[in-house]
Image (cartoon, rainbow, N blue to C red; front, side):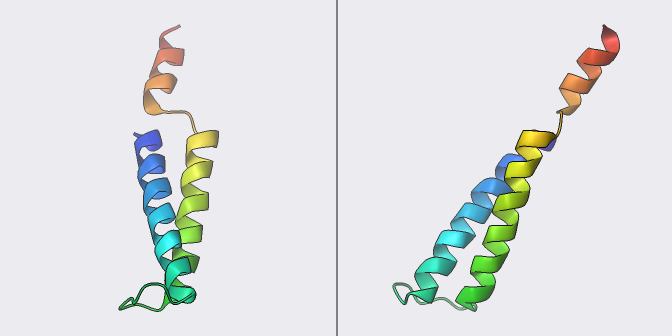
Length: 67
């Protein structure tokens, strides 16, 4: 479950980061501030990657308890 949340955060953060960067450079018109979107996207992207790398999934923890 933790890895699923990490994947969702990573993909959502990457999309928000790309949209924010395109908004900053004027390629796309957004309803939100492009700087805020880029910052939020960066935070979500980094937190999603760290969840994927550092946390054990709940299935892994249950398997370790059984052995």
